[in-house]
Image 1: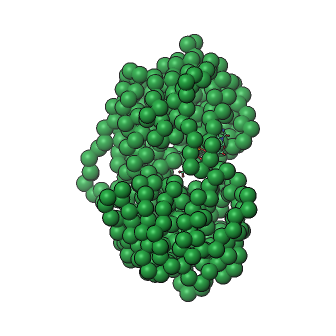
Image 2: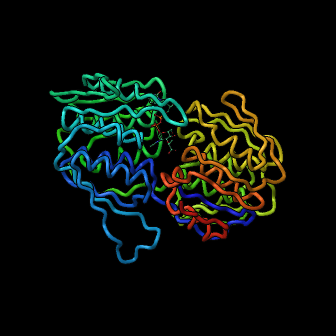
Image 3: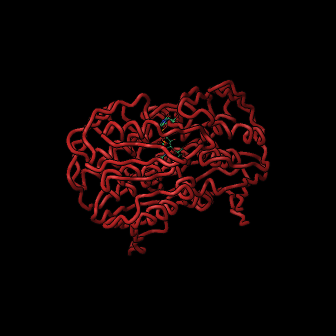
Length: 429
Ligand code: EPZ
């Protein structure tokens, strides 16, 4: 298994191009199943999760063409996928595939809406929490589907098609909002989704469905209105920039010191995290090119943060922020409210010399003067990159094991960081 070797202590200076968002690209690719015409997605990141989803969609009979490089494309240009779901030959998403990538469970919505049936494996547990799918199933039931669970599979049927309905989520869920939105877009009549997720990735999917001839309103607010249409057509859509990748590199610069332009980043997608970074002592400048992050000289100030659904502080930046606070001049507190088991990075950061005390949902981090390099183990996608941030500021060498977690969500991480002066390399096998 690949490892990443880092020798810490170098400030980061230069430019890091921000890729398309993983958490938009995945549901957008799945939305391609809503139409029998071609959906062309631009700015798609090259990630393990994207390739895995390509395999999963192929299993349903979907052809996906990856366009070759175009004149003027730079090395970091996103890829263009042409998704052709003209013919769906199989409405079953098997355990072997779904268990590898949870978001593939969301294929249940377009399969059911377009084909009237779907058999999809339950995604199973996850390192960061139990992550049930009950809200997804309740939403589909509200739209008139018959739902049965048998031998680890969800059997969903709507032979006469789905019907518009009022859906009220007991708790904000990004995935369940995607499921309700996609299913309702082809249902008969009006659907109102209340307590919907407001994440930018939801807005990106809703905008794409509207480009396909859908009728969605209110995306980005807690109440989304969808008027179903009999058929959706093909479209071309560009995936929005990755706000979690943006926040991750901004935290890295704040950790090591330096001056970096995050080109293509959008400040409006992560204002709460930028506010926290400013509080911690980073200078953030917004420009047409993207975001400039600087921290020179002044130390890192402690912060108190609680993770929340958008527009609150994102849970997907919690581990990265924790890494940053390990060297703050004082005590920080981070409360995780979205996932019940998202502190796996704490013990690994402690191996670098961090002082972190856990009490239920809250971590108390006492800042230390220095961190020291050590071998550490990645446990999930965001935890793994928090170890990279810790190691970039630690004295000496760190070795990060199980970096396949990183490849799921960060494109060309070593190249992007070493171009800014980090001493980082991947060691194969
Ligand atoms: C999406 O996961 C993201 N994944 C996650 O990013 C992100 O952490 C999460 O939203 C929250 O922002 C993708 O977009 C592919 P939820 P999702 O449904 O949709 C509970 C990353 O690192 N819940 O919003 O699975 C659930 O257990 C990943 O890129 C139910 O109880 O998250 C959790 O506590 C990790 N029943 C909470 O709601 C349900 O049916 C929020 O989960 C659904 C969710």
